[in-house]
Amino acid sequence: MTKGEKKKKSKGKTIAVIIVAIIAVLLVAAITGGMIFLNSYCKTKEYNVVNVSDIVSEPVTLVAHRGFSAVAPENTAPAFEEAGLAHFDAAECDVYRTKDGVWIISHDIHTYRMMDKSAFIEKLTYDELMEYTYDNGSNIDKYPNLKICTLDEYLEICAKYGMIPVIELKGTNNTEHYDEIIDSVQKNGLSDRAIFISFHFENLQKLRALSDAPLYYLVQKIDEQSINDALSLGGKCGIDFNGDPKKENTGEILKQCQDKGLLLGAWTIDSPDVLKQLVSEGVTLITTNAIRP
Image (cartoon, rainbow, N blue to C red; front, side, top):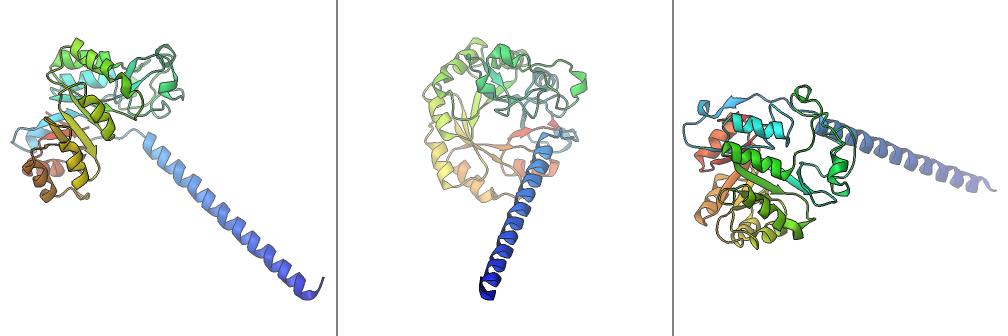
């Protein structure tokens, strides 16, 4: 091997080592970032609960986000009971369907964040899911052996306290079984009160074919397409948007929605200043963790 060939080979090895090192650094950074995000996502938030009457004098419809999640583990029977006791106008929940056809309440499709064992909810039967216990959420120590809440249990609590059920249709599976949700709502005498929301427009289309209940299209940012989609759902339709003031849902786009007859809601509003701004712009359906009636 000539001197030039040796030099070329050495240079090639150096480049390979540099490439491997870069890949390793990027991989470590990705894993570290993922772990930081996961830890942040799973950590129970602490909220400063305030009274809406201390913020605005105008009438506001307050929706308890996943129940009164500032004082009890989210999306559980205690959280919905606490919402009722606090006189919230409505309680929002998230629904999935178990392997054997039971509609249950959970924000995540996986149990990892909130429960003591990990599995995909839609791959478990209801009896299998009942072997899982909550180990996360606000004031979890007050609720030993807490089990998952069913849609029927949630609706019974809403009926008990006169709350509006606000049901978020999660994912895009089981849309062919939405008639079961409608039946549960009717059975609990809430057909004239229930509201359905979803980030998935096709879910709302499926629901509209079964019910004339109010439907809200969940969006991060309101744009022309989302406005037209919401309008296509027919009467009692609206948009429920991210109310963070740093987003681009300005007064101008909100007025455009109102001029076209769309209902408007905002999530998830825990800041008194943001609430005050939204109410001044005509948004009075407010989903919140920590602003109570």
